[in-house]
Length: 353
Ligand code: GLY
Image (cartoon, rainbow, N blue to C red):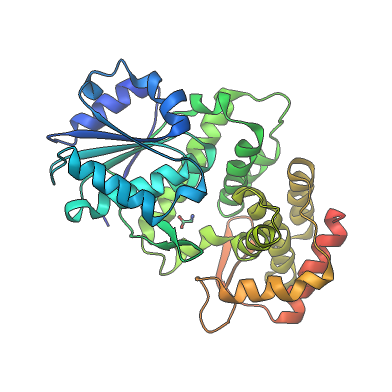
């Protein structure tokens, strides 16, 4: 996989001009969803390099992350004269960067693209690391390719206007990066005060968080080994997310990951010797900032089945990434059904759910 350049912007317009000039092209396309078209694209109007850019606008939210939207982007690229020397800019959250990255990577066998993530989740996770794709046949991210952006431009000024729920959804991935990196980064993340956000400090933390992901992706771009560290919290988290959807009470991805972390830190204590005090501190932060997803013991079998069918697992064996300590990662761990049910019990007792 090619190397991807990730830039923590001091000024988005300048960084974008430079990134565009590093990608020689005949035509430039800017993909937005209906919200980022209205709210974010106007901030780039003065950028000379975008003067003649063609705009492509798609519907927002995960419900539009499908084949139909993808085909509409291919169609617009084709009708508006894109060639294999064209360049695409994806301006939006993870849905836009995932789908736009996939559209660019497949159009005429692949044109380069630049990601400008506008949500925290996209900044620290979705837009970085080269995973692109769409949902298909009722399954999330079922079809896609590994194909890194030429550049990812991170402008944390967008976070000032991000709603609180989407902010915390992204923050869960930062918390995960803290847990898999260093005690210092983990501790600074737990010290975050939602009532007095220091945006300069947040920018530094976002930079550090992205660095954690970049380092891992550089080592294992295709998720054969250590990239699985990024799945911490996601084995149970995805099951919570799917259960919530099936019960018509959808939750944001990062919230499901935060709740998944509660169960997976418990498993880490039990099976890998993760220190109990660090588990308690992390769970206290999650409880305070994410509340709890409630379910009763009748849901355990359903949750377990969802975990068995997750595409990251084979032959029904549930694969976990666990921790021996903050920054000490144990990939390819498994737990039996009884232990997993014990983790569900622990979650309900601890979170009061
Ligand atoms: N979101 C996890 C990864 O990019 O591998």
